Length: 280
Image (tube, rainbow, N blue to C red; front, side, top):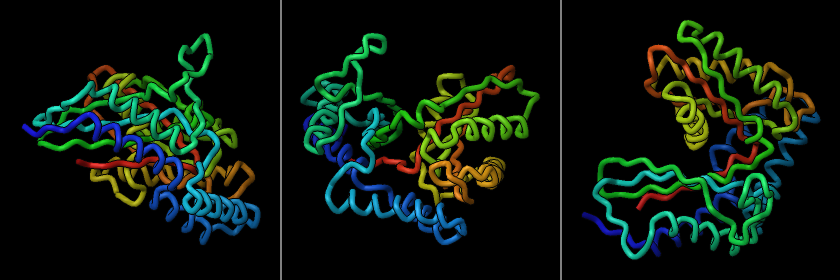
């Protein structure tokens, strides 16, 4: 049994919160550069260059990429041979979020009660998803989710007989409805299968996968490619002002489901897809 102290978890989460909010992921920057090279709309090219310049300034000066520093979502892969010692696991995570958001001068966007609408004094709690895996390691990933794009999430319970074409139509329609309000170019996460709540979680988790990594499932990889091409033909463009670049990538995760159901969830990220991870 490997022991990991709660203090170490707090320290790592604090660092990841700052890193995710100030250092745009390398795969997203690469996708922006490739899009800039392909884009022939002058206005779209100007916006893409501004997004890259903004990311460079954020990294250089340790400033938030976006003023909406999101609701921190923490994805945990906890090895079954790991023992957390020296404190409560969830408290250690939330303490790390509080420390990181304070140290990084990041905006507190969390309301303690969804109906009373008062912000919390401590920048937490985070939304934590824990998966038990084999081994003696711990993986932590922080995904600060801004709500301009989170508000465009969608779920539909399809009939099993409806199939891929209906799913594609649904996803493309939802992206079109998101339009400029979700700050394109987008990265689109899709969850297919399981139950309604798990499909929604899969859609968000799909955003963690590097954009350049191909899906190992050939059927799903084909679906991702087709969706990316169709979304980019919508003409929404960067910030909704037209152009070829509406979407930088589509990531799909699937899970076994019931014979009578076909849940499909979509989670859109704005151009500032922010996440940072660490394995210990």
